[in-house]
Amino acid sequence: MSQNTKIVVTSLSLAVVLASAVALVVKSGLESRRADIQFRQMVQLPQGAAGNSSISSVASPQPSVRATNQRPAVSSERVQQLGFSLMSTPDPKDRVKIADTFGQIALSGNASSVEPGPQEPKMVDLLQAAYSQERDPSVRRAIVTNASAFNHTAALELINSAAEHDLDESVRRAALEARKARENRLVLAGSTEFPSQTWR
Image (tube, rainbow, N blue to C red; front, side, top):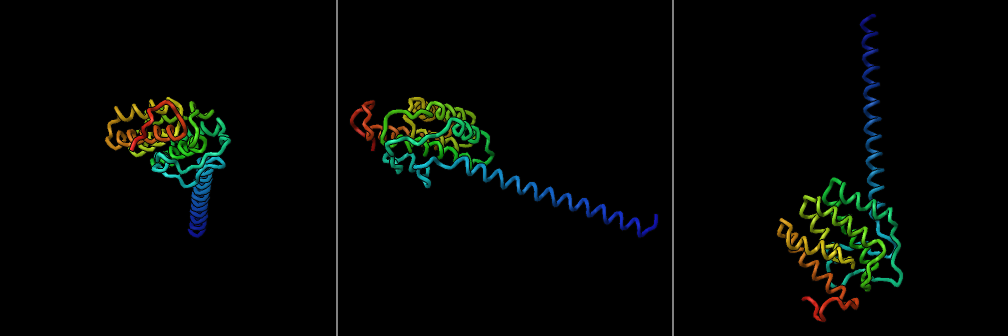
């Protein structure tokens, strides 16, 4: 084989390797983009829920979400997907957004109601499971803060447990604020579960 032939073969081999590498990079970018789009679609709120709610608005005694007479339907599958994402998404900022989505879904049906919604037991179970395995304090804060949007008594158990036992002071403080916010919201919605005073 001549020297020129070897150079041509080597050049072709390098071109094939380079083309393969480019194809892999493009494919990886497309898959990443597709996963990002699926994640964003999954955490979108149901119709009628607030799109810009923040953690602080979820904890507020006067929720920013206006309740309608009919609770928005949230499928069991969607709740399960959100729970899985809350426990498996690598970025803590994304987990905080997912915890916020749980709270916004709850508030969209509970702002003027004292009865738990149909998906609340499952949603609160998922929040409890996520809280128990979560290492990032910012995500635990988001979970307990958003638990205040739920009427189910298990949400209060989660909040009380965090207020007493969480190792991070900021999470314990957030849990105390969440408990006050939940009580205020339920009193305003007409609950007789609490004394007539509201927390300041």
